[in-house]
Length: 154
Image (tube, rainbow, N blue to C red; front, side, top):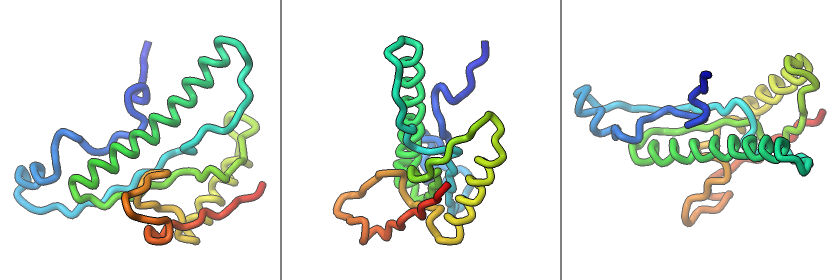
């Protein structure tokens, strides 16, 4: 059987073992780096009623673990980029986007996602400079310049 890398990490971009200053010493010049991370999905699981059955509870638990692991990976990336002075930018599907596909390959749902992306780009709300729900000491939402994410209606 084959198990992909998603079992150990949902998002993997930078090495925590090799700080930027060591890499710069190896290559012999200062690197000005930026990173853009796009999460291909939401960062919170949709609410659902779980049947009191082992299989249903196990599936819901693994789904929730997948979401939590994704956010944890973003926090890890943020810690590394902060340590290495790398500009970081994150994008994910906002929690207020509640459309769901009706089938495996649903063109109507995909169009809604495409339209959402266009709105987020046009309004300047696509890229965030910190992972979801990440708060730095001594800052408020106003001081950070957080943007409200537009609501998409079905």
